[in-house]
Length: 71
Image (cartoon, rainbow, N blue to C red; front, side, top):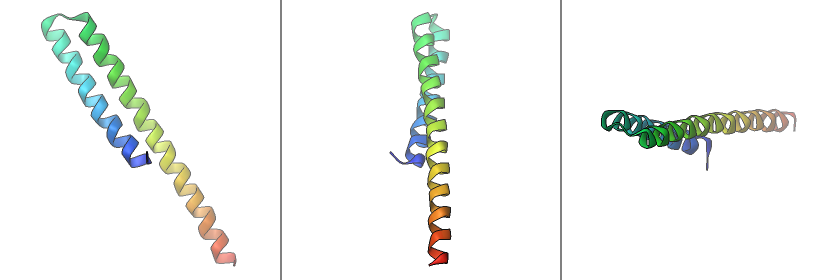
């Protein structure tokens, strides 16, 4: 997946996790609240992964641009 795809998936997982937590709280389900917290954490990790991929890609592109200018 690309960095932007990871970020989008992370945002979606984070939002779904928050909804699950809210529903779990509303119905008194500790299991659902836990699942929601886990999904939200997964979304956070996916977003960080996407940011890292984008940073690496930007760095590689800068190096490639610099190398091409010297040719």
